[in-house]
Length: 368
Image (cartoon, rainbow, N blue to C red; front, side, top):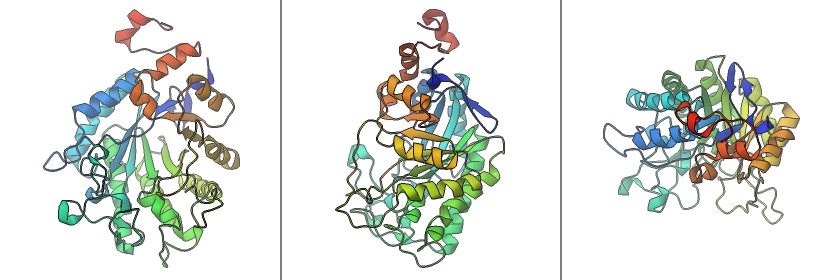
């Protein structure tokens, strides 16, 4: 069997292979009314098809823990029971195909209140139907309105919202909970000195800037079963330190290694390693596997399992990442949008047995 298709066990949960679906926003929920933020038949079909396609872990898109934590009005949410019940249908479908169901719990922070990308992705102000975005400071994201600086009491409310959403996720049948700490959204914006200009216990020093992230993780871990894993998605770098011409002081790979040790102590079982998203003008050297070294650095420095993501498209490339110990799993995004059956086709390429759904197996066979 190839390394890519070996199972991996985190706590007491065994994921059948190392090909995982990255969380990707679909901007397809109702924007208003009783169905606001509720998963639809589209989400069910979209996610279940990747499970049928052989993906070991299917991660549901960034799901807002509060209404104002949505990127757009069409995002999924998990702040009420109607949303929980709809997601229970999704998890049941994912698990029926032998895959593990995961969810990314998120708050968009200062990047909230935008139109969906298909409609331009531009910020929406309160005057044109949007809402007030929030952040660690009043420093706005590129072209966005100035966010409201969260008070200490409001920070505590957000932490509680993550815990409440985790409880609902568990009730909905999810087996993996991931805290979204990347891509310039709320948790990441507390971590980076570019966006965090606070002077209280949540700003300034490294220890203060990671405080909010650790509080969120600890709150989620406290309500999540000990036998099930908690993930954390990080942007390993803001891509400022790597640019000799950029004098801004951003989050770095070394900071990520330091944070990983703290997250591990707080109960995180795997670091989902991405990069960027906080600084719109950062120069990002995107290329196949360009983020993998950051996952490797965390794994080698801390022993914390990692997942690599970003322009991983070829089975041989994915196999090498796992076989060489560069990461413990690969997360595919756009490639799985293009090809829901990538995992089955990769297994064939790597000459390893596949586990087709029973309804298909009679026709295609283990290696068909």
